[in-house]
Length: 321
Ligand SMILES: Nc1ncnc2c1ncn2[C@@H]1O[C@H](COP(=O)(O)OP(=O)(O)OP(=O)(O)O)[C@@H](O)[C@H]1O
Image 1: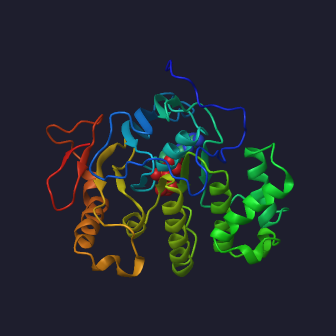
Image 2 (image 1 turned 90 degrees about the vertical axis):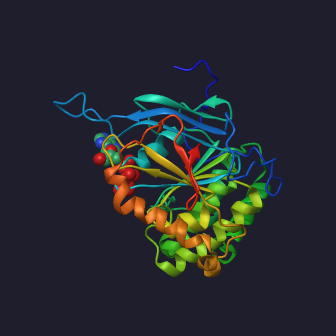
Image 3 (image 1 turned 120 degrees about the vertical axis):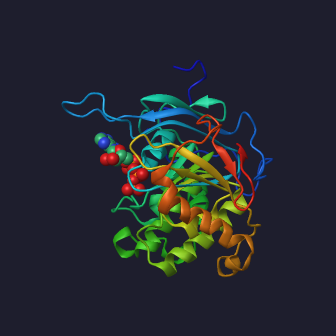
């Protein structure tokens, strides 16, 4: 147990809090080439084991997981099904407890759900009896219980407009398409202006066209707010489009972080022209090669250190993170 102050709050929902006003970004270290020794989010020695009936000591899903995220960084995690990505996200959200290790965010140990962290899951998790607006207002009120109704409404509308849902404020989830529901979920998570946004394959169930347009909206909001993001995806192109860094996990059980890949593609990134950048295919091939081959055959080489996974610049030599 760490002596650090806990970031646990009595709020039951992990929907988020505002360390920064919308548009007023803090100083951000977005350099893809440096990582401070005390990053904004620090994951140390994380391990998760799920004891089973008759087997109290099964192989852990993952172990010895260490990484950091700087404030304002967008980090994607890639790895095969079952390596523990969602479990890691749940632990970051404070919705699950690690068997060993801990997570420090902004100097405090994560020990439960908090409005400091907004979560968007693949399933939209909206309240079906409330309109899009009321769903977002509910989150805003939980974050700002002292705000008057008009202020709550204006704040909620602002975020729904950012995801182009200004015309659908009064529609209930059953009246919205899958993409629109995910947009409401994204507006809700951003509306409480969390210190950290956790996205668990939020676009996994959407068709390619809808997925592309929501990705574009996400890029716009993240750039405007300098939001710190941890996102799970199975889509290599999505990771290349969105991430500053891509965490590559080996297959489970006993999954670990093999390496952390630095995305060299300049921002702002435009989906339609990204593949024209010379570094695009080097990066893409590197990620696909990992998923197809190296994720299952991973053998730590000499000098590989779980506490300091190599920071890889595809096409160049690697260095410790
Ligand atoms: N509550 C639980 N009890 C027992 N086993 C669990 C529990 N939660 C997760 N697991 C197991 O942990 C492993 C990792 O699950 P997790 O969902 O984190 O993987 P993942 O990498 O996110 O997979 P996917 O990409 O398919 O979503 C799986 O084998 C899963 O069955």
